Every structure is written in structure tokens, then in C-alpha cells.
Image (cartoon, rainbow, N blue to C red; front, side, top):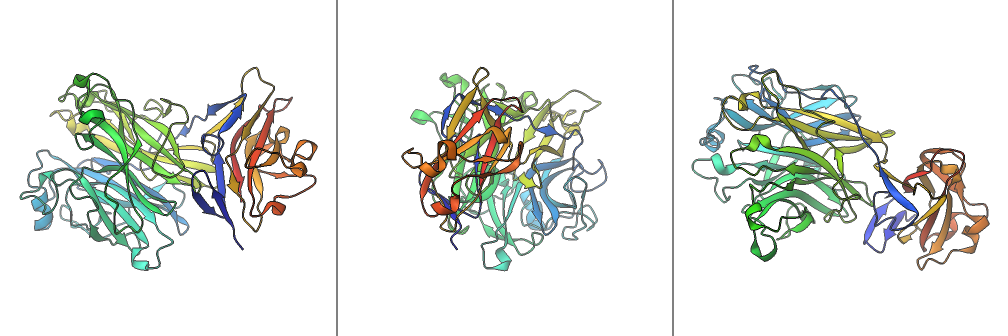
Length: 519
């Protein structure tokens, strides 16, 4: 039976389950007497993954960076991340050593590494035996043909019929230190494609955009597209009138992972200053770090972007700090903020590990780190100690993987204006499956809410309006099932409808609508 939900306004189709989030003004666009109340995530103070001790000769003895991925896969949690180590590895094969020839620091970015967990909290670093690193194969590094690397973003692609391509990865290579240059690449960081049958042994396929700077926050699949969401900087993508820009977010995509569409989509950008002197890589204004770290939930994408508080001076990198902002998208390409300028996870709430040698800024980073686990939504993210790049400070550099949580899909809620007794919200049109469906509310004060059904022109259907409106029996929960006294949604199979949800203030819990679940 056809279990597909279709959204004519956005062109999105999703099987079995669709979620309409309160933070998404495309899914729930028409509102009266309601405003958003964003959730404050709960941040775990301790990191869930830390670097190995300094001087241990491990690939991550300086930083375990979450420019990476967490997946729940086969009853376990799996993490791909990028390491930093102190001091050159003398055991690199000749080609990789050549790519590191001009690295001018004792800090080395890479290699990419792997960890596993039963609960997503306590992680182990398996000995993969793939890379000879400072005399030992007992490490968790991946054997890849590149030296300076980062951004280990991975998906498990259930729709690919070829088991050898079931896992797909996009990572970043830094070719600028190679001597001579890597053939075919511009001397700017760019993206690399790879596939695997198990997520451990990787086959590199090539560079989707070999001449373009791509430092990405995420790689994901949404609405049939493979999407790389990344930052561009300076003159790589000029602004209005050909002017210089700072870091801004752009999406690039493919329909099959092999052939990539030329060009880019302006995915999410912050305002650029009007004064030309303030523009560019050194301008003192907020920029978008790494683009959007997005996750697809079928009918909607939710993501975080880095609010990069840039420094005015090129030699003051250590002045920079970074928070995380919340964005949402229908098509997975163009994102918008539910509340403009809102800091969703602040660096003060998820600080980098303290350092006895000095006080340093925290930079938060996003990746492929948003996933639903049971009754909670997990937000894995990185936090690194920004020591700057000056001798005497850079030795104190460190990066860890952190975790924040919210109740499942409760990014934010629609609630009544402070003085209002009643408010309403209309959904966007949705074509219901021929086989019928159910509707549930992720809400507090759910039993006082009423759900009516209309056609796409806002005309309420008699069997679903007024005294025939539906409501949940539960007072609140993550999926409070709505039932109508005279009809069921099964009778509307194949029809295009809108839902009108009324919130009323009563003697119970303050009404808060976080999401509408269609399944």
C-alpha cells in the first residue's frame, strides 16, 4: 500500500513518517497568538571522547575533533572523527610524506580515526591495524592516500544496491603542504569522496570539485540528493558586485554520488558589513563556520551552523570564538533560522577543557552529529581550545567531542502569547497516503488542544470541525495520538488537506506544541 506523504508546496515526498516541527515555518506557516519558545539543550559537562595523552604517540594525542559523524548502526554507535597529533609521523609511506613536506608546524591535522560505543556515551578506540604510526599498528586510524585531512562525514546509504558502496564518506584534504602539488588539485582545501562496505576499509573515488575550496560541516542525503554543506571564504564565492566575503555557507549536491552538479546553492549566510574595509577573511563580524551541520528527518532537515566571531587582525586567530546557531530546511539546500541570531548552544555552556597554562577561547563545531535515540535527540558536537597559532600557545591546543540532548524532536515549541487565552496554527498542505495514516502531537498540555482538518483552501471539513474536532487523551508526551469522534484520517486517503491546531490555556500545563507526527 502507498504510505507516501507529499508536500506540494515544497515538492518533498517521504514514506511512512513525516514530522512537522514547530521551528519550521514552512510546515506550520500560519499562526495566530502563538510565538516560538526555543528549547535550551542540556549539555553533558564531560566530553564523550577525548584525545589520547600527550606524548603517547597516538594519532590523536593532541585533539579528537568532531568535524565528524556519529551513526547508530547494527545495535552500536559508531564515530568517525579527525585527529590532530604533535610531531611528524616518520612511518608515513612516501606519497603521504610528500604531501606533508611543507607543513610548517609541529601540529598535524589528521589522520581520520574511528571509535565505537554501546550507549553513545562511553567510547572505545579499536585497534584497526591499518596505519603504521610512530612505530605501531595498534591505533584506530584509517589508511587513506592523503596526509593532512579533516571533516570525516559518513552516511550509511540503505538505498544503494551495491554492498561495496553502502557506506559513503566525504572528507577534506589540505593539499597546500604537498611538494610538489597534488596533481589536478588547486592549492586549497577541498572534498574527497570514498566508499566502503563496512565503514572501516575505504576506497577513494576522487574529488567532486577539485578546483574549489570546500571545508564542510556535513554530508547527508535528503529528498534524493547527496549534499555537501560547507563554508566558502574570501573571493571563492564573491558577494554583491563581486565584493569580498567572509565565511558563508554553501551547498553542493549530486543525484548519484558520482556526478556532481556544477555550481553551488547559497545555503545559509549571515549579513556582510557594508564597509568594504570590514569585509574579507579578517573582518571583525560574525561569519558562518563550516556551513550547516545538517541531519535529514525525511520531511525536514535540522542543522546547526557555527557562529564564528571573527577577528579583525590576521595575526590574532586566538581571539576567535564560535557558538552554534539553529537552522531548518525543507529541501536540504536552503536553510533559515527559526529565530534570527539566536545562539542555540553557547560556548559558555559547552566549554573546552580548561588549561592551567592560560585562558583560551572555545570554538564549537558541528558535523554529522544529530540523531534521535529513543526518547531524546542527541547533538554530538566538537569543542576545541583555540590557543591561536603562536609558539608557546599552540602547544596547549586540544579538541574533544561533546554531547548535548533535548527530548525527542523538541527543538522548540509554539506557545501562546503571554496574555492570550487561545491561539491557532495551520499546517502547509499535505497529500495523505492512500492507505490512511495517524496523527500524533509532540506536546505539553496536549489534552487541551484541538485538531481540525480542512481542504487545501482552508475550508474546514464538516466531519472534522467544531464539535467534531479531534484531541488526544494524554495530557502530554512525545506522540499523543489524536482521535476524532465522527471520522478517521483513513477516510481522507489520497486527499490534500491542512490541519488546524488550536491551543487553549487552562488549569493544566502551559500548552506547548513541539511537533506534529504523521505516520
